[in-house]
Each structure stands twice: as C-alpha cells, then as structure tokens.
Image 1: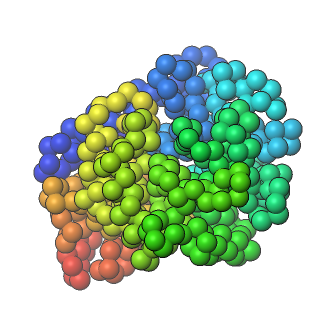
Image 2: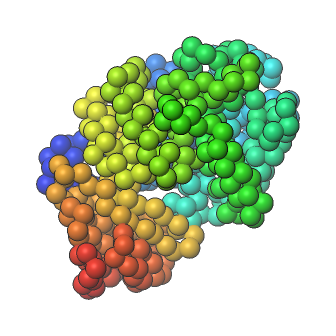
Length: 424
C-alpha cells in the first residue's frame, strides 16, 4: 500500500488527491487473476487491457504510488513486442496476462500503430530511471536494445525520403500507421509535430546514456523545426506535414500541445506566442475526450504558466472521470507538477521549484519516493520550501529554485525562504 499523502490549506487539493490515489490503486491488476503480469489498467475502462500510450503517460503517477514493478513489466513488454517483422513498431495493447489484444492486432502487417508511441516508450522508460535510479531501466537487454532501435532501426525503416524522420502512410488509418496521437484529425499527416516532439525527447533521453551524437541529432531536429515549421504571420508552429508535402497550420490538439510539453519549441518568443495560441484554442475548442486534457497541466507547468496548469488540473479533478489516465495523472500533477520535482536518482540529485497557483497557500507531499530516498516536501506559496529526508542510502543533493543547493543526510531537513536556509 502506498504511503504517499498530500495535505494542503486548500481542501479541494486534499480531496482530489484522496480520490485519485484510491481510484488509481483500484486499477492495479497484478494479483487480480492467475497469470497476470505486474500491471495496472491503462485504457478504456470497458477494455481489460493496458495500452502503450496510456502506460507511458500514467507511469510517473504509478511510480509515486509505488507501482515500479508494474511500470517495468508493462513497458518492457511493449519493448519486446517491437520486432523486425513489425518494422520495429511496438504493439498497441495487451491483456493483463501479457497476451496480445486482438481488437488492435490482426497480423504483423495490420495492427494499430502511431509514430509518437514508438518514441514515447523510450522517453518515458528512461524518465523512470530518473525517478528510481534502478539500473534495470538501462541494463535490461530488451529495453536497452529498444531505446537504440527506436531512434535507429525504426527511423531507418520508415524514412522514405532520407530526411532522418519517419513518415506515416498519410491515410489516417490507425491500422496502417498514423503520424500523430490525434486519431480524429481531418487532414491526415505523414509527419506530425507530436511525433517529431517525442522523437526529439527520445533522442535527448538516449543521449544521456549513449553519447552526444544523439544529442546533436535532437538539436538538428529542433533547429529545423524552429526555422521551418513556424509561420510568423499566424504566430504558430505547424501541426505537421501533409501527403502533398506542405505544412498544415491548423489546430492539432495533441500534435500542437505535445510540442511545448517536450521542449521542442524552445523557450523564446516563438514558444510564448505558440503557448498563447494553444491557450486560445483550448478555450475555443477544448478537447472532447478527457484523456487528451490530461496532458495539459504538464505542458503549462513546464513553461511556468502555473495558473493555466492549475485550471486544467482542476478540470481533471472535477471530472472524477473513470478513465484510468485521469487518476494517475492527477497524482502526478498534485505532487511532481505543483512542487516542481525533477529527479535524478542515480546521481542522488533532485531539483524542486514551486508551481503553486494563487489558490494554494501551502502544499505538503509526504513519503515521496526518489530512488531509495523517502522524502517530505512542503511549499508555502512561492517563497518557502522545506525538505525532510526521512531515510535513504546516503546523502541527497537538492537544488531549490534559485535559492541554492544543499546536501542532506538521511534524517536531516532544510527550510529555504527566498535566499536563506535554516537546516536542522
């Protein structure tokens, strides 16, 4: 049972966390039937399955709830399913016993596949290494092979024009392969911005373990995107390239907002104008499906638009929606999002930066697991942070906003107010 707790002076926060934690843990399927993999429900509540896109997006919340074994088993299962006969696409969905979900798979030439999922699997799996510091995330042979194949073999197998980017069929048929997570696009794309953004994120993640050659490729993708996927008069980036070779600058939902979520759009004037466009479109044409909205707090937290992140986090909590992605991501955002936690457990390092909106005066998350460290983190507005290391394998170095960096032994605390510290 997870020991994670969240308390706040805002009752809505504490109530929302209690609901999300209880609901997310109820989706765990590890011991629900004989033969099940360590697993949790990730997809439509009406389907007894876990889907690659959903698992990738639920993994941080799952970690915070102590579901590391489930994350590892499911993400590795997807990695193992990417074979040469499937042209290095991982399968889309499995039942809890690990069997292929026939609903989404008819043959190795006819199954649901979306380019962003290929790179999302690499990006989110290596993100789990940051949270856990567990070397199985980089040493497991199936995962280690998948990471490299996703940015090498997969790209080579689907790059028909030699530009270093994989192309989709351009038909919009998910069984033939699509470029985007936006399955309801009215203008099929061969390269979509969300696929490009997650390709960029995967290259950066792989570069941390396999050298700067991958980082250079990520930089090249970003430079090309910033220079050539932007329309100055419209003030926005394209959502993708069409079969005819032109750019589509329409509202793309996931193919729009996953760009800033991964940092592909940088942090300059273009990015700010693009975020303005996204916010305007979200008010005019909000996502029809609640699971699409579950990405939005992450988008806005990353770029310091904390009131907007809170607006969409409130929307998720208010929904009390039974789609599993909602409860898992609410846990993530109420802890990692609002507290601004960025872990590097393998290096015994952690950064924290308050993203509390005006509506939250105080927030405490207790028993936050970063690697083998058990932490309590309290923030009061934007001005005070207190960190206690309950236990751990050794000293933990923590950087708190712009205030500075401290190294704490287990059993020690630090309280930081603006530029001062009060260790105990």
